[in-house]
Length: 396
Image (tube, rainbow, N blue to C red):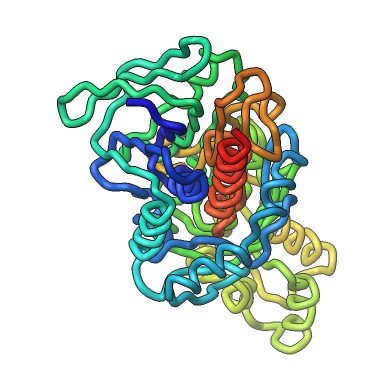
């Protein structure tokens, strides 16, 4: 079977690419259903993009690489597509856009776009062998127990990274890329909860509050959630992508406020009130009790000197914690690292040293923030690749 383009992976990037690449395109995936990450994302409503998408919201060894694709297919372009398919959506916090209905609407939209473009989809299909005969890519596929040999001018790696292995995620794209001489930036779990030893925060499990969480390389002001295993919530997931093993993180428990001023005011107005009671007006009482195990929160407000108030305020706004690690690939939402961008064209996503080989989506060393950014990278990189393939086909 001879085709123009073989796309490995029926996820967000792969389907988007197929919708642009056009006739002669075959998408294959080992899963029984397409777009599984789309289906489970955003609590089943799919946080499909973000109003604030810009290159600075992405991590990569080459921070400039993502600029071209993001500029040529923006969040507004994807919103136009969603609108043409009659999918209702709403904005949550921080520019995050979700379907009013189910995430499966986005999958259905992509499947309709693929069908209109003349692309074909094979599910429950395994890649048994892959080679290059000097002019074309040759793939031996096992489709529901039957062997199929496919020869393609173009091969697109859209199999994602290593996050969420229970959905079948593997390092397949890295293995294939390495075989063709492309370099790999060591993959790491991203957007992932932190773990701490000995159930350190078990007594606070389920408690959430707004914080500013910071590492040496980034800071985010969102909610933090205490868990039996450690810390989670949007602020923690965000900075996990900037954290390195062994480093400390700093948490401001009262972001945007002046705890020293608040305590001085309370001291003047109700000096006989217990310090712990006053702090319970600023923070969840359970957290105040926990902090009292390591901070001196005894006595009344009237007993506090300005120096002690300043020291306490510093402790609350600069709580230093050193995670033991993260929960790893099991719960990571994305993969940091991946196929190095140095070997790829930022305009077409084609490998510079292997004509016809393309890499898109999470498989590339481009990782977005939490909040729809990674889906936008899938739409943008998939479109850049698909249009480049379609243009090459037209010229030939």
